[in-house]
Length: 188
Image (cartoon, rainbow, N blue to C red; front, top):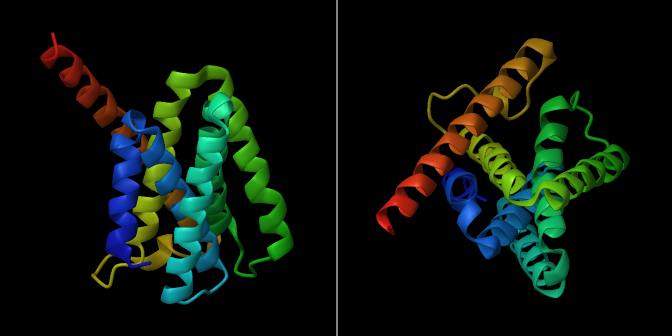
């Protein structure tokens, strides 16, 4: 998937994801699938197909699991977070076995947290997941942006990548709250 599309999907998830459950499911599913496909060296065409399949699967899963919707949202957004953590913390030798264990474990933690604390956690989960996708897209731009965020080497670059992620997630959550408060005050 192109960097600009990944940034757009990440921004939608980070800022507007709190208002549309369907948007969260499709964008987070596509983002998680794409990040994992990219981590294992898939080409652009293959990455797009895998991302589209991930988005469709996440959307269908959400529809079928309407009673457990918050749990599913947390699961899918948690998969984005797990995939991003995997790519940041990976030491350069991407292990399929580690990804198969690590990403679902983080996804399950996200599902439990969002299922438990619902509305409060959905805002944070979408801000964190969307920020992960935005930073993954920015690291793939062919501009003068440093590319260490794509494959950080060493603790210093990993720390910078995590700090940038946290900062963008906090800014996204602030934007969500401001947008939400302006929407509620206009409707009165």
